[in-house]
Image 1 (cartoon, rainbow, N blue to C red):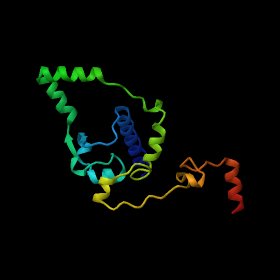
Image 2 (cartoon, rainbow, N blue to C red):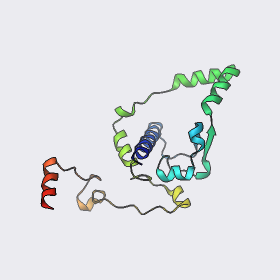
Image 3 (cartoon, helix red, strand yellow):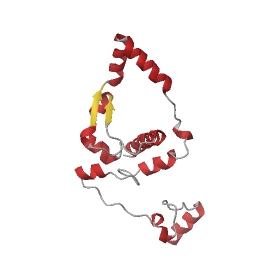
Image 4 (cartoon, rainbow, N blue to C red):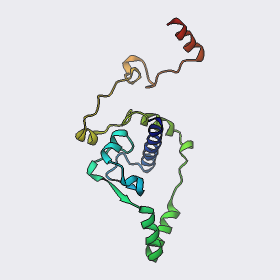
Length: 162
C-alpha cells in the first residue's frame, strides 16, 4: 500500500506542477496511455488521488499511444514534421529542483488529496469529511498545517513518561 501511495503522490504532484507551469487550475480531460492505463478504472484512480478532479466521463484509456505515434511518424511525413516541431518546444522540468514539488507531494499523500478539492468525484462517490488541522485556523495561531517534528530527545522523554 505504501508503494502505491508514494507512486500516486509523485504522479499527482508532477501533474500539479505541470498545471502550475502552464497556468492551468483544472483539467477537462484525462487520457491514460499504455497497457497499464487500459486497466485503470477512472473512478478509483480519482478516489486514490492518482489524477486531478474532472468529469469522470472525460477520463478514458487510449491504448498504445506511443506505438500509434511511432506508426504515424513512420507512415506520414506531415505527422513526422509535426512531432519533430513539438519535440523542439518541449521544456524539461526537474521535479527535484522545483521549490514547491515537495509540498505538492506531501499533500498528495492523503487520499485523494490533503488540500485539493474533488467536487466532480464527490458527485459520484461519498467522500469522507475533511479533518481540519489546528494550523489551518488562523485564530489558533498556527500558520503551518503540519505539526512540528519532535527531536529524538523529546520523543524519548515522551515515551519514558508513558
